[in-house]
Image 1 (cartoon, rainbow, N blue to C red):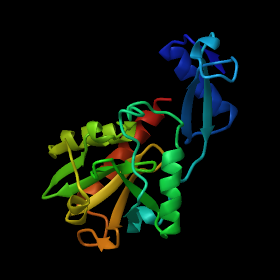
Image 2: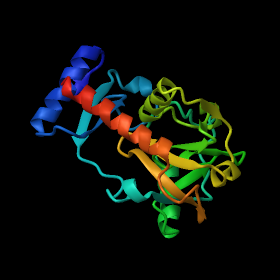
Image 3: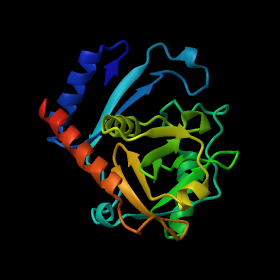
Amino acid sequence: MLKIPVSKEELAEAVKQTLRANQLKEAYIRLVVTRGEGDLGLDPRKCRKATVFIIADKIVLYPKELYETGLSIMTVPTRRNVPEALNPQIKSLNYLNNVLAKIEAINGNSEEAIMLNSQGYVAECTGDNIFAVKKGNILTPAPYVGTLKGITRDTVIELARRDKIAVQETVLTRHDLFNADEVFLTGTAAEIIPVVKVDGRTIGAGKPGLITLRLIREFHELTKTEGEKY
């Protein structure tokens, strides 16, 4: 457990120490910043110093075979929180909204849920960002729609643009997903996983697409190279 303020170097070293202590080489790492010790009230001034703690563990969101065959996902009634209520750029542990949507997906025999925003546009999934590929171009919901700018999301955008693949952060509807050539999800634990069905509709050829597979390969190469530095 670390006390704020902490430098970037100190934080990186603390993460590595946590991995060593738990004998983990490849792991999911979560850094949590709390308002620190204080009373049970809502007034943050009662907590004099923020606290940081580190969670490191192995996590598998989806079975291995689904990375080869693709996910079947569905749109659920529970909507994404409106940005005016909870800024989507704040990565918090306020996941009740997402949990309710996940339960709806489970009840619908689906691996993941698409959450729409209050206006009916595609925002993201319960734990992942969503991408569509149409005519060789990549489309993904813009942050102002109510989307978290995930680290893996941004990395995939960088990889695509490096490969001269056009990426557009825009407004997407369910119709855009139904008519996409490819759909895939990204997330810290999920990495990049293909989607082959949305609301029972087959996407493209019904199997992981070429651009999706290319990005998966390049993402694995990137993370392996970065991991070897440590």
